[in-house]
Image (cartoon, rainbow, N blue to C red; front, side, top):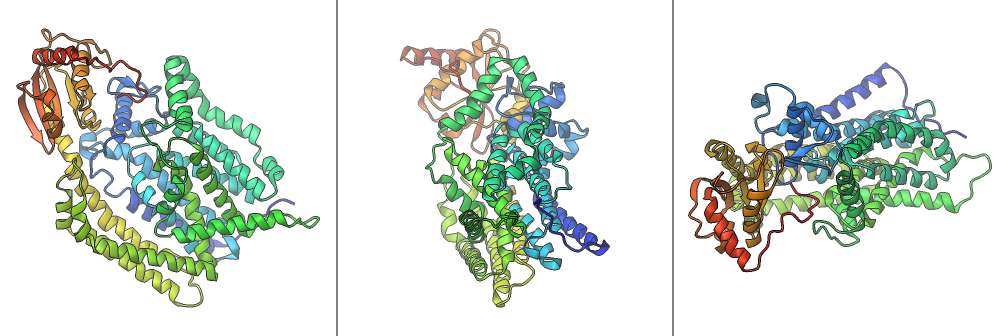
Length: 618
């Protein structure tokens, strides 16, 4: 028996109501992720590498392989760079994109909004559990907001990296797969096209996550054969390959072993099989991330996951009656969301390298489980809602007590942050928003019968938390951490003489390259870093940088933080200080003195290490 769609009553009024809900989701998405998107600078360390690569792509017309700081960048496929570059190709950048962040962040923001709309549209078109009218509309809105208000989405939806784009493309693909399963009249081909875009956004991980989700769902429903026939994976994967594969073949043909070793060898296989960049975490790491990413509705998420596991157990432990379909439409989407979430959990738990951003593809599934569980109205779901309200109350108290713990924050890059936070009163404003959300949650729990509003009243208070507290805090942090780098970048542009080389030592900020538009030689704090810098000035070739002798190019500009400047090996070089901003100093160094110091260090046994293979060099 084929699955049949569950429909709300047809008619113009219903369609108008659906469009009104989707319009509200769009407005909330724009407020959460597009408002003030360009008000702050790029956040070090990774976003400036994406932004600089995309800007260089738009300006040079070389759209195949991204380049940053004079080197090819193989770590991610091109879709995110292409979308950013379209923004950088628009005229009038100095007026509408002065900090470079509108063009760089907009693809992430739009990807998140696309997921919100897809979640809302799916639940409006296929309301679960027979819900209709106001309850169905609020469940759809609640799922979109439960996803959008995840702490991880609030952060990654506004920064210039590829994780939100992968989440968007994969979520749209998986929701389209479920829709094609729920309604046989719907074509499945758009889902495979969206999956191809996900492969272009982050690589083969999209195929693995989609495959695990669909396999788990088919097994949980005991209808793997029906799912296979409905989704037609062989021609579907051919369509996905048609979208995603040409760029990989072209990059491999042009770049050869360097691309294969870096992209497939390091950024995919090695990240999965071994720990890179010291990102070692315990096996239960993503269990903790699941709880944090679901805040403050983690109890509802856990209950929804347990309910899905219970349905699977009952389905497999009881033989199906002859001629009766095993497909349970009422619980189908919740079960699908649970398979989706568990696919991400299992896959990245098996991976050796673990980062919080790896959880982002699971957040749309978590949003579905939270909203559907809250809409049940059962005793257990009301207890879970009560636990979520208690978490909101606890967060409100913790934030209200901030004058006691904010002074304990210690970050050498932002020494003035605690004082500025306290003076701004923004943390107390955040506490007020959580208190309002707590009151809304108590109102939802007050009556013994569930209200049709679902989680929406409490979620709207959390929207205010993002708009009135988080975004102003973001601007405050940018003024403390990002503005000094942009200021010293302006000093570099004014002070640089011709082709004078530029270096940054100690605290390394790729945004210096972005805002100076110059190749920057980055070295760390150790004495070997000084030896490397002297040697690189004489020997390194990259786009925008040619090696030179101290006689041909007698000086070098060095951006150095005040802590590194106190190290013994940087003392006695008689720098000319050209400017300073925050922690950073702009020096002009005589290269002959720098060379003599490097020779002294080499005589003590140090040797240059900059030519050793480094997969993520920039």
